[in-house]
Length: 314
Image (cartoon, rainbow, N blue to C red):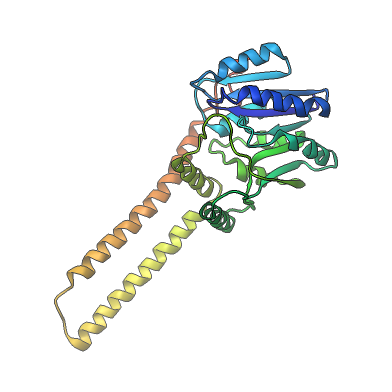
């Protein structure tokens, strides 16, 4: 198999027909040897029925149905684990990742690159969102050990060597943007303008975006723990400095009645700081807890070609 295309799907019944037409339009002239692996991530609409019908009509379209909604990271991993192609593409079902770029991406991979990354421009985004994104990536690149690029997501084409390297990483708390950068290899970038979704609704709420941002900070580095040490040392030094100032003031000016406002500010401030540090420790402890249980990343409920494969660890 020359090319595999992995597409995670969650409640995308309205997008599947257009997705099929767009992929056939691009892939048919590109190569005779391709497969499309559509991963149903526990959809509650008619997505799975659409995928079943598509697989029956065209054997080049395969589907995997997970036993529940495990999240996009698990769905991508399931598709990568079942992809047989010498090169594997990842893209979204809503066509906001334009399949028309696959031709240019395949040409670059044939030149010797192991990763070809599609980078979305910020055309059409509000100034607030663009500024927040730039700030987030600037902060992330100061914390993590690999470089993350603004506008770069999961839309990319990988060589078989890069796919096998990703599959060899067995951690449970996966942050794909970081893992794609961590494996390294020669990487090319293709820019594209933002494409608006025409069918269905976005699955990314403000809360999920914030949680994803926290995952990126915590899951891929230990710098918050180091910052907690620095913050604790700074607060301890400030407390000792304040105590010394009180002693000197009492010796010079005599003792006075303690201030209620100062006491309350100190209690609230240091109490809040301690809760923050405990929260950071709790995040890392929780991730260690999940890692030690060694549960599979996903479970398969149904598959068009490999119903016997229960999980990614087989």
